Image (cartoon, rainbow, N blue to C red; front, side, top):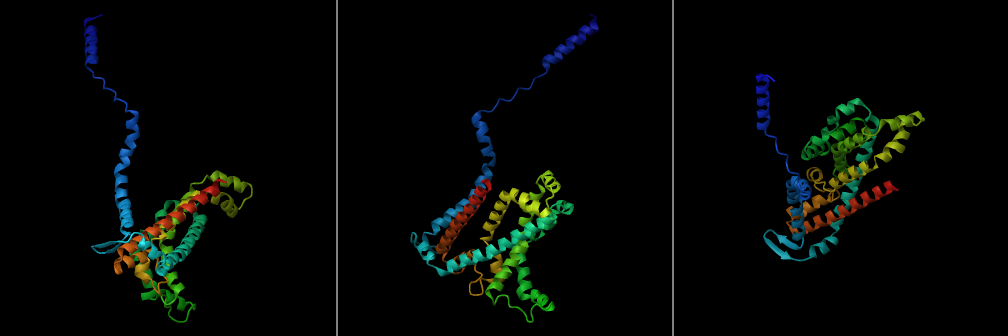
Length: 315
């Protein structure tokens, strides 16, 4: 071996001895691996609890008192016994069920029909945001637009008169069902896209090979939809409709801006009833009791619907 080869060998050995091999990180213990995911979501959970759990607990506590600003008088379940005998409470609950039920049914049918006719359209795939435009408007702006169309600006009445449906201007707030119709139309216009985008996403996510096999067997589009697509969409439909139904129970903005509960309280929903008791009549404890009862009713109905729907889907 020559002198230069020996020198290269020595330099290589020296370089290898000076290279620091990075230490491998110590594996985390089983406890640390279990706790780490909770630490990641902990701040978000704490924030959600702060803005939801605390107000709810405070409302439950406040419902046990007669509250007039700073004067709190303990009544126990007195507010609940009063509210159960309150006809206005049950009327508001019935109005919420009628207006919300009709609105939810129309939204579901329209959203499913539109999704069925265009879910394979490339335009829908690429431009879904266009279908969400009504949802992007502020609820107060939508309420003002429909108030102008129905009442203040008489736009709808002028259109109906121009096509010969009616002969005179329609007073939409003079009739119970016409006043309810204004709220239903405004809610359907704004929130049908919510269900549509969920339904069309569910239809587009289904396996195309199943549809192709059904078409090869001679099945029509409607038969494929009713017998294949719709049963496969059952869990998604139930969850989407339940979420939308829960949101409808809090309908307030449209009522506050468009009808103010008229005529004769026929359009007063539960949210507006709670607002009127709390911020107009200053019965804060009574309003809190109504809120708690409404929460209980909503949870019971939503739980029952979801449980029955998923149970029937398994059978």
